[in-house]
Length: 252
Image (cartoon, rainbow, N blue to C red; front, side, top):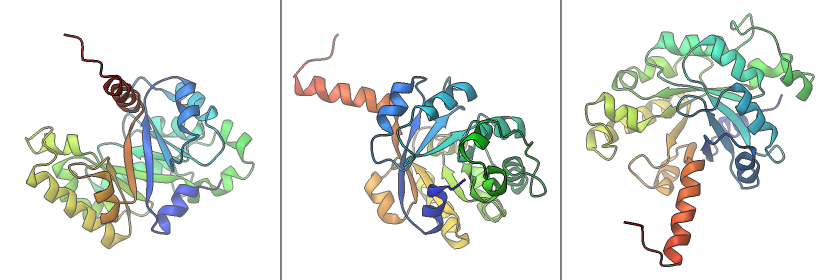
């Protein structure tokens, strides 16, 4: 397999993506016609599962958008099954230590580098060389979403095989006792600290929208994976814009 997103991140390029949560193929098909670099099929905070994620991937137009799956937990069974659907990378939530990061990496890689079981099924249909290239091409992203994880950013991001990190600003603020206050100085200081650790170690940085700043400002700072939002927000924001243009007042 060839992972265009991983190559872009290794080259220091900035990318934008979207979270997909609606279990209907029209959504992934329509959004994949737009110039996104990646989609995250979210199995942690939506009703998506492996079967639905695979169907959404199959509906994507062309191969310009790299499909990633956020698994529900740092579990080798969940990671193995998600990769076997054809995802080019995994986002692992709640990585709080070096041990957590090592567990995630091992789950994503075939032996001898890891413990991923060999049952390629769909992936081998898409690429006969998959077994030879998967260990090098799979993108492994760890989520830094607690104060504990941020304090251990050096040890987490030093783990060989971790390609990128993704800040979860809402869970981060919750762990700090100020849930939802992502613009709070304390939250922003922690985000900046982790960003600097990532730069020092050469690990690509990811963040949800602007996380207290504008998306443009985050991209200008050098963040490499910036989520522009999720499908359901795109839908409601578009509808709200149309209602505003029509000068339709909200119902009481």
